[in-house]
Image 1 (cartoon, one colour):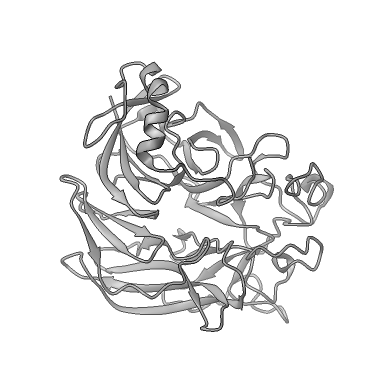
Image 2: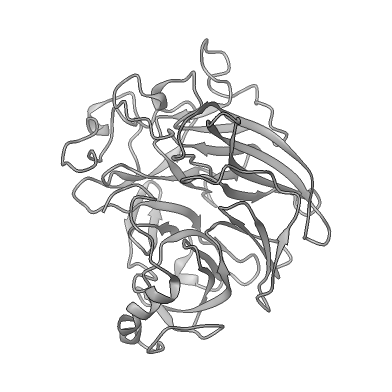
Length: 405
């Protein structure tokens, strides 16, 4: 197993994967003995908690990100191919939202993350990250926003806010998670675009590019005056942190307000990081992973350099890895014993990780959905019920809901 999100083959189809795991499903206490459909509820367990797994809607084409609307009845879903969808979670109906940008849907690119303005619905801004081309075969990670119409079926006045330059001839490592911090600013991850020059001149160590970084922007796309590299010659003003490989998870700790990020390694070396202003997270000069196809380390361990920040948790070379995608802290009422736990979607590892967090100490608990054969792309809490919505990464994918039994 490798650390990259797209380097493991997807299940052929969801139904084939379920059929293949029917025996495993039947072994879980109280679950059905075969594939489920509609709103049937096989179960999954993590520790002493048993949850029902309900299909909200299917099929969805390569869902990448989920954003529940605060009315509790609708869910926005991005499809990597370029469509933004709105789902009625009560009856499973699905519609396409118009007014989205044109995207570069090649390789790992396309329509990617989604976030609502913190004051939504008073400020009806919906933020999207996406890959787009310059028309000459090169691509870059973009951030834009539009106003969601009252009917929830159109984005109005969509505008491009920022392009993570330079454009390059690569279809991978766009990063592209976006979140609002407690300071009201927009934080966005950008991958290293698959540069392989593993040394001090790597693009993720070069502050003159916006590759392998976390960006910090005002809601209108402008650069805050107090960004850490605003006054440094040759550095990009929008950069907040650097030395990242390809971060596809980003969330805010509900108590501390700290920004947590999940990041792919190469051969293992997957990480969870707490993102700090101006910090260097080491890729590729300091890393816990190995080069593809070998047991050779990419760089030295983080512990051997004082100028980099080590991950708070990692799956190092030799562990098998855990290519991590979307993530969220749990604060709902539906699962009291999960309060403060961190949930992270696993792609090639094909399970939903639950991790307990105490300050900077992280411990992985028993996984969820490990018997489905599903690559987990995103996980978000429902605003009222405290249930968890999960996006499965497949060309014929379900959106599922986890609720207590």
